[in-house]
Length: 128
Image (cartoon, rainbow, N blue to C red; front, side, top):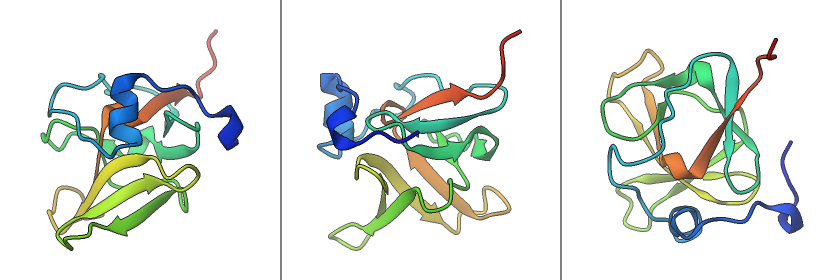
């Protein structure tokens, strides 16, 4: 469930640099996001659901990659230089990374290249 602004999670300095100041992690330096099982990746700041685990794939780029997002929950904004398209959380405008098309890495032909510090995995499997 997405949080209202007053209830957003406090961010570490590193998370703030990425999510608020639109920074980028070094490739292969972020949190391990190679989770198995059923679940969703949510925005680390507001917990808005962004990506289903089934849409994650290994692109080899060093950042978590997804070929789809939860419909309507990720906004695209063309960078000022027109070269890339930024992706942000549609609830809090937190910076996620960039989206690329035409690389032929999956059948959907889209790659959301996401900073691992911008997202958090929430399992939907029951423990038992």
